[in-house]
Image (cartoon, rainbow, N blue to C red):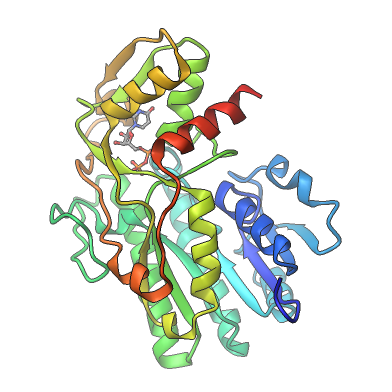
Length: 324
Ligand code: UDP
């Protein structure tokens, strides 16, 4: 519980991560304001919070400058999470995704800068693009492919948002911290936008084939949302973090094929594993990152971050949730 109640704005607070963050902040006794256009967020994610007198929800988009401005006026801190989510979304709706990511962040940073309200901006491990120098450090190169390949627009747009955040920090003294999230998982995550873990779990529980894209040798590191949200709260409350970029997630690496096998084993499902070519999953010319792993030394040093929940524990938790 904090000494004086803070008023906190979460853009995208009806999304998977935003709703867990809202829960964590309410538990600390803070007052939480959420703005979400419910495009990929879901009112069900926050239904259980609506009874709390410290929780307020406004349906709206971060492109609505007037609405954002009114909310920012009331806020002591802002978490800017509202953005296009998932590879599938960017592949299917590139224009909306790009405009949301670029204009949304610009609106929030600009309005926040007038009053120097601290902002935490959630970026993504996609910004590293197809860099193969593993693990990714915050100062690693960002390597993107051709402009004809829609996927890179997502990482590039979030990458431009990072430049904007740093420029607002430097020239307008906006206290802003940038967090690059690596594959966060947990209850309430939707499988509708690509996310592999909820997809495999639902497929296994419904006895449908587990759809591994490509040969399944690509790797990812999956972090539990319950490890991630306390770290976000610590970072925004650490003035030393302002003007800095942090990787956040897990560094326990697994291939997608092994992930599929693990899900099959833990659910006891008889589902087959079927391998789907990327072109079929995402369209021709799709490019994959074969390995994605963060170097977490910077965040470990800054806030003593240590992910506690193993992948196996996370999978069991999500399987239990999905069964209900
Ligand atoms: N993936 C898969 N089957 C699916 C969905 C995703 O094999 O049904 C793969 C995807 O190609 C990627 C990994 O799982 O290699 C993680 O995908 P996700 O969309 O969850 O996140 P990404 O790390 O690609 O942003």
